[in-house]
Structures are given as structure tokens and as C-alpha cells.
Length: 282
Figure 1 (tube, one colour):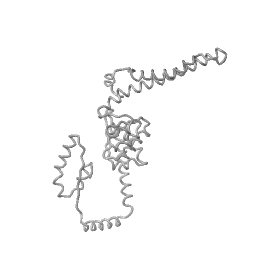
Figure 2 (cartoon, helix red, strand yellow):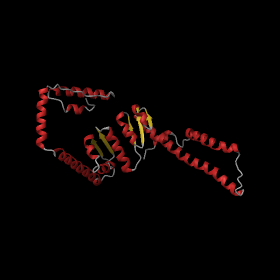
Figure 3 (cartoon, rainbow, N blue to C red):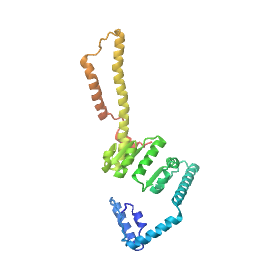
Figure 4 (cartoon, rainbow, N blue to C red):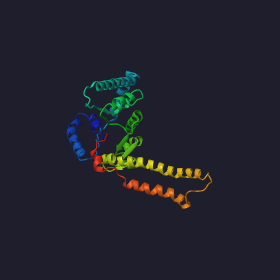
């Protein structure tokens, strides 16, 4: 049983092919309706069939030799390196500065691309593309790609997911956005993907602005309090006399740490949300 129907269709017998077209249409109809689908197939095996297949399998395995898998893996890696190198050269030689390239890679190929001797070439190619699509990948691969981009580029990464398979990716990213089942593992939770733009452009802008102002505010509050004491003590010859009333000193941090923070967080807005949404993200 697989969520990827193509894996099941590849393994169908000739008799099972007669249902492929109708099943594909039904899966597409369910997908367009927003439903998740699973493809299921089975075959009844007699013990004699298995014994016969196992004998042939053992013969083939021993006849080819123990280096078969090593040679295949080496050939696959060399092919991936050649393709990534050719793609990088093609991007560099492109004369049109506005041309955009996309990279599409599946889970099997990504397994080799994420190996230690290939992952930096893969990252170099990926960052030169306008869009990168990794399809049919495992949860571990999602997290590894996120870590590679985060550590390799030094940029802030954001991951968004809606299922348990995305938990590793969300936790690996600098900012995790969760939908539905993964809200407990994320930094921010939204109900639909369409709210992501508003989360980044409107709330992200406001949060960045308020945090920057609050840092300056706390520096100002503490410096004003400390320097006043310092200059007063210097003026009085360091006599130990207090310039502040006891109640003033008690309430200074309580009042100035709570009320301004709440007021700034609730009311501070340098531009309206409509203007934020009109400006393109750089």
C-alpha cells in the first residue's frame, strides 16, 4: 500500500493493467476534491512460486558478484555529478539575465546528492535556481535538505508543513510554520497556506519593528536609571545618599517593564497591513 500510485502501477501484472486507466482517473478525481489517496495491490503466491523465485534470485546474486552494488552506486554518483556540473555550466552560460531555472529531484536521486562528497555541489546548483522541487522524499531527507541550506548559505530558513512527515523539517528550520497536525512542533500556526503571506509580510514586519524598538527602549531605560545614580553620587562626593525615593526605585522596573511593552506590542504600527501587502518582498 503506497500513497504514490505510480509505485503500485509499475508493479502491476498484464491482467492488472486493464484497471490502470480507470483507477488513475478515480485517484485524480479524489485528489482534485482535496482527498488523500492510497493505492493498494496484492498478489496471491503459492509456496512453489516463492521457492522457484528464490532459487533464481540466489543464482543471480551469487553469479554477478559482491561488487555489483558498489559498482552501481559508483556509476549513479558519477552520473549525478556530471548532470549537476552540466546544469551549473548551463546556468553560468545563459546570456539572458532574467532567465529562471528550476531543479526537480526525486528521493532516490536525493539520497546520493546529499552524500558528503556531493552535497556541496548540489547546494551550489540549487541556490542558482529560481525554484527547487524535491518530490517523493522521506522525512529525514526533508530535514537534511533544510539543514544543508541553513548551514551552507548562512541564511534564515523557514519551513512549512501540514503532516507528521514534516516535523523534522520544521524543527530543523530557523522558523517553523505548522498547519493542522504539526502546530505543536512549530513556532507559528496557521489554518491554511494562504495565510502565509500575511504572516510574513504583515505580522513579520510588525514583529521585527517592535522587537527593534523594544531593544532600544530597554537600553534607554537602564542607562537613564544607572547614569542618574552615577552622576548624583559623583556630585555628592560618593556619600551614599540615594537620589530616588524607595517607592520610586521599587516601581521603576515594575511599571516601565510592563506597561510600555504591552502598549508597544498592541498599538505600534508604522504602516498599515494594506501597504505591507502591496509592497513586494525583497
